[in-house]
Length: 314
Image (cartoon, rainbow, N blue to C red; front, side, top):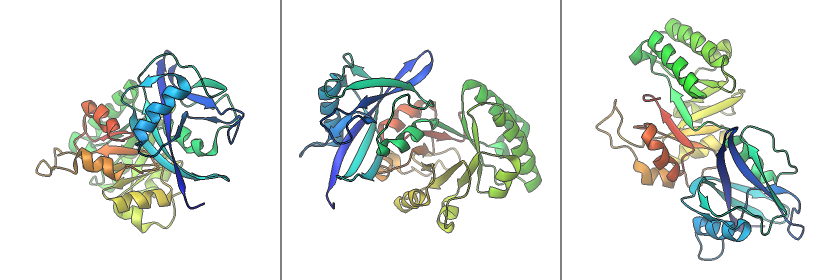
């Protein structure tokens, strides 16, 4: 089973008054894994790109013409009958009414909810978990803004819907960082669904009851196993960093700097093309870091990012 079958899959997303929903479709009786639910898509034909295959498959399977699918995760999975490389795209815009032409059914499920249909194809389990991950990663900057001002910024961000935060501020004195961490953790704990990660200090993360840790790239390579937290993230700068993050089993990573930053305006960053190339086969969600602002969100996702990580502007 050395040959890899390449497959494109579309994660169709729509906004409703109850929140964002994604589409699952049921495999027909004449296919392997008949009756299982999956993200719609199909095999890449000779001469096709992943994107071209997705456009064709969703037209044939659902009767829709998709526009601007955003590349996302790439995962390999070994089934009894084949080894498959799945390239997932997030799709938020299409023309036509969805109607299953090849599947036996299709259902919408709200993000964060357990799918009401079973069974779901095994390869799609990690995708469901990744979908639940927020797409903005806020990084604290108390050393520049002051602790009280930063706590107020966290409070306001949570009120606006930010749900994923990293407590960084490694230059603060130990007692100041501990005080800041306790206060920040209290604010985050009061908001359902919000998650706080502590940068590079597992002991502090456990003391304040944080949801996880964020590993520096050096710490990433020094560890032999994944820290025992609900969520673990990592900073990456190279392909080797990304490979190690996947090997260690982290939940997501940040990659950069992509663009010049306030602290390092002389550095051009790796740029969007290099960013897209580095994460083309990434199996975990990757956030773009460095020079990001709210206006960067669309371009980041168009280049394969899960979302954006920001020290300022959140």
